[in-house]
Image (cartoon, rainbow, N blue to C red; front, top):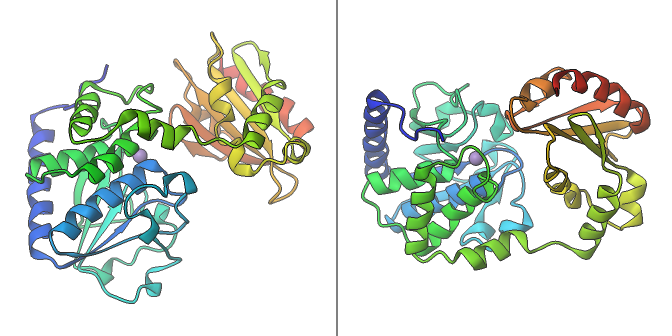
Length: 338
Ligand SMILES: [Mn+2]
């Protein structure tokens, strides 16, 4: 298990950052909070928790994202007020401070970042090198953290903020989704301590699990069944495909395909899981999702095809008919998955 706090220097840096963030929260009046494109539980949960904190302090706060909040997160308090924008020019008001959440490259906000609109920028991130494109920002970056939510929790604790139940629900959502329910390597003792403290603040793990995960549609589960029956194993690689025909047959949506690869990943003794998905848009293109365990670096493999992601989860798109693409991609991947 990774050590949560690498060293004294890092801790000093964190302390300074918290002090500066707390100072800005006290002295500035208005805050814009933004996360990455296609926002997930971590981005949305972290943004809403900070928004709630600042709101309670009497600050003017707006949470925005370049894409809509996914339906399964709409139960979080404040989620309905998150605004979708395509650029800062759409905002009616100006803001003193912009808080950018988990965008290792600021382009991940989904449109150009216009630094001059704000007096100050705060960057909170748990991805490595999380500050590309922002200069002179206050940074709270720790790649050793499970999630952005874990860092927001740390900041709140260090700043002496009493985390409310609703804020804890938001942050627990971020931790739970980004750790894959505490199963990925990013889960540390500190992650679990933070999650436990959130439960003490009133988070009900059972209810929250049900809201986040017990929400599948019948067509989605039937698609899962239909797709899993196409699962094949070739050496250390397991792969499956989702064709347009299968989607139509089960009357399923693109969203229903998201978790299929996770179930393939339950297979024992496999190092690399690959899902080939025929895209409707652009037609004639296949989306390839990779999940890895052990020594295999999914990010590196996706990079061979012009894609990217994380060590454990990455992806890319490739042109061609799915039946042709599969053997072509597998022949390359098999060389690395040994
Ligand atoms: Mn995250």
